[in-house]
Structure formats: structure tokens, C-alpha cells
Length: 143
Image 1 (tube, rainbow, N blue to C red):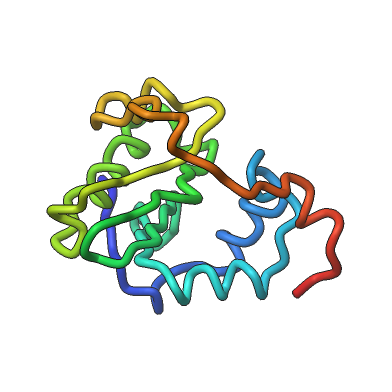
Image 2: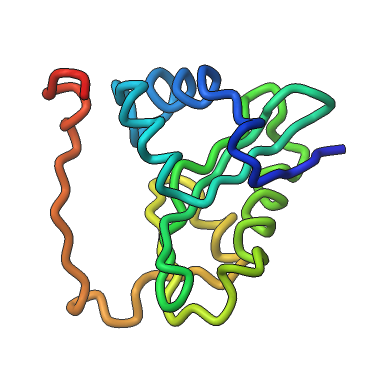
């Protein structure tokens, strides 16, 4: 059984930072202060089995028109139990994130998971641009 909360005081910041900085493919090398600042300015979802945090996701949003799902992970020992689906569902069904015109994410390996929730390649990719610095966390001094 997994329990989800958006109460930031319950989040295990050391665990979140450790996973993102050491084990993720998208935030390797990120500093703890940057993780804390990202959490501070996001709607966060912690997944807990008993008292231990085993999953995390955060959403950056204006709560009116747009949201971006980021930093979704389930610890390796807890994968294969549907927790990735459950934390994604928790984020997408949150009352403050309803009626949004656009909900985006980036993934290199979980297309099948997110497709189950209606995510697809952009309908008009020619209209989407980005500034992307893939080695920023490794190249920059800790912030």
C-alpha cells in the first residue's frame, strides 16, 4: 500500500536529492540547494510505504493554463508494483491541476507509462522550442 502526500514537510529531501543527483538520467549532479529551490516552487507529491518515501514527482504550474510534470521516480526496490502509475495519477488528478490547456513532460524511457494518461508527442512540434543545457549540473559550481 502506498500513500501520497503533497505536504512538503513530509518529503525526505536527502532521499530526493540523492536519487536525482546520483541515479537519475536527467538531473545527475544537481546540487541540493537547487533541488530544494525546485521543490519550494513546485507542487510536490511524495509516495510513502509505511514511513519511508519510495516515490516522488513534482509539477511546475500556474494552476490555470499550464503544467509541467518533472522529476518522477520510484526507488528501484519498489518498481514493478504500479507506483509509477499511481503517482502520475495522483499528480494529474490533483484539484489545482484540473482544466489546464497544456500539461507537458519530458521522458527518454517512459513513453509507454505516460501514453496511458494521454500524453503524446506534440501535435505541432514546429511550435515548440526550448533552451536546453544537458550538462549544466556537471559544468556549474553548486548553487
